[in-house]
Image (cartoon, rainbow, N blue to C red):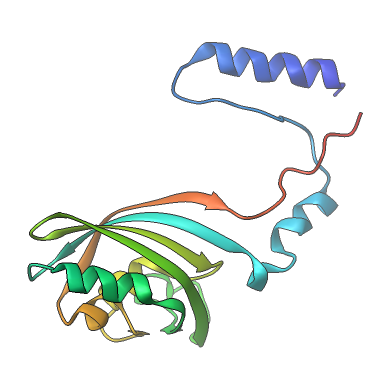
Amino acid sequence: MVREEIKAIEEEINKSSDLIAVKNLQVISKLDTLLLKEGEELKRKNYSALCLVERTLSPEDIKKLESLKDLKLNQKTPIRVLHRRTLATREKLLHSIQAKIISDHLLQLKLETQAGTYVKEFVHGDFGRTWPSLGTLLNTNADILELDVENIHLEWPPKPKS
């Protein structure tokens, strides 16, 4: 497929809907896909998470969360993926937390984590399989209502070949 054909497909997609946008569309090699796995432990991801907490939170709770830097999490393979992943305990880093109280029982989190961190399990603790969890840090029960990946720190896609 020549570059002009790919550009035409990209433009056609972008004209067809306001709901999605495509940029840098290209055909990549199998070798290029290996870059996604390379250096997995060094990559970082940013998430936005809407959380439900059992007790009313205070400004001190927010300060406590936001003071945490490079928090080490011990995460056993989550129950929800145990049927397809090996049982293991993995140490992951939660690099930073920004928190905002939305209402008495709603909390918005912005997280920067090491790639491979199970964010849902960080929030609810997965029956004690992730420690510490948001719930243990705040001494309350917590659950996740929404989770969005906002950024993956990775130079991707590869530069288009001319």
